[in-house]
Length: 631
Image 1 (spheres, helix red, strand yellow):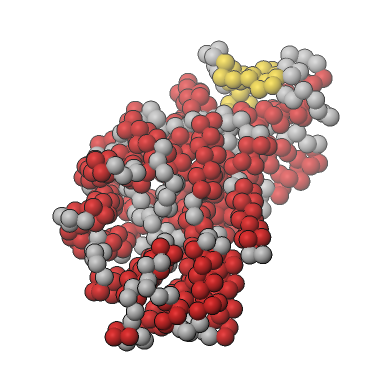
Image 2 (spheres, rainbow, N blue to C red):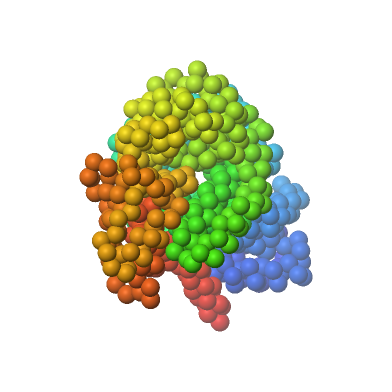
């Protein structure tokens, strides 16, 4: 882009502005030839001798921004190049210098936007519009919306729609689409976003961003069929910008319990990331890691989920291109880490049930020790809710103005914030929500509040939630069923409890483990040393509470089957073909598969879900190519 711009100059800007044509021009030529490492090396050599060389500062800024995503360094050199050019009197500027300044101001604004520096963004845009054409008015709308200046944002967006410039029209439409969603007008958001798609399609534009944006609004209106259509449309688009539709499609598939398809979507997500530019890859890495962590959590892979979510927290995303903020996103990732750590503890307790008595006793005693990491993470999450806007956005289901959590994990906020706090917020939210279907989600959250409090109204809320929730909400419905089952079992309502346990196991058996619950069951062995040993271990599993009136677990020498009280076989798990201790291996396999979303994960799958290997390998190859090209 910079090469095309500078090629139009009658003379090199280096010649005219710095008097250092040779080395600066070489750096510029290297940048044009897509050799960023060589370009930066040459430009930095110039800056050692002359820190005020315009072209060298500009080249270094471009490389830091576009290749390294090092925003502070890019900002420093862009601003320095801007000052250098400003110091050249207008009468002495060569042809093309003003166009170069316009490009620099535009890029300076992009860096400020990525850094969420509103003051610098507005100032850069004002300076651009004062001296450059065509004016970039609609760009202000997104930042105004992010700053909560909704009336101004709407005015700017509508002005963009009234413009003769197709780009301003497209941008104004996208801002209005996002704005209607942020102010909680679900129907208006769908209309605005669908209108953007119609205009873009008529112009022959790529629909990746537009289709993704529209999908968030149709989902907020619980139109799952249209959401699926739009997300598929987005994934068929071109790689460009910060949107990765596969990331969001994976989450959409996961909430429906379509685990195998979610895994495939994650692989496509990493391939899409690989095709994006370096600054964008750096911007969305944490979001991609968090989505992998969600799928692994549902699959019962607590340790692997922790690895991904820890990395997301260590390298957080920039959120300038989304309606979420850095703070709320970090809170969502922290809550996901709490869930992953809890699953890993449950897996550890399951593994302990196969060990000898002294080991079981020792680990049981250790399980009563406090978890400082959980306490710290809980405080971090709760701290974000000191902002009332976060409360409002988080509990406005399918709304991006709060903690961006999947609905099937929203209940994890109840013990973190306290049941009373959550109930008070739900009482405030209900009268404000005109969409009737959303109230079933409030019923689900209230059921969890009542369950934590041990209230009798839990049963009524569970029934209302299960009746009202869309069938596509498999993971959330399983969670609600598990809560209702545990509540009914405690109250001696055996038939109701067993029916709800069975429903949870059919929708998402991982809900039982994630909630730390146990199935009432008897364990029956068909005989033989392996079956008898495995049956003994399963009987003391934390996933089982003994009851003659519950489920039946039939243990054979090579497989374990779970049978519902009515005789319906929920599922069987086979042990590995070879093992040092077949009984232990069978029980471990049973725990692994019986209480997790049915997702087959091989070692190859795990490697492909971690895009780091592929991305770093390609980055190394790119760096090597640059080095070789410099000789």
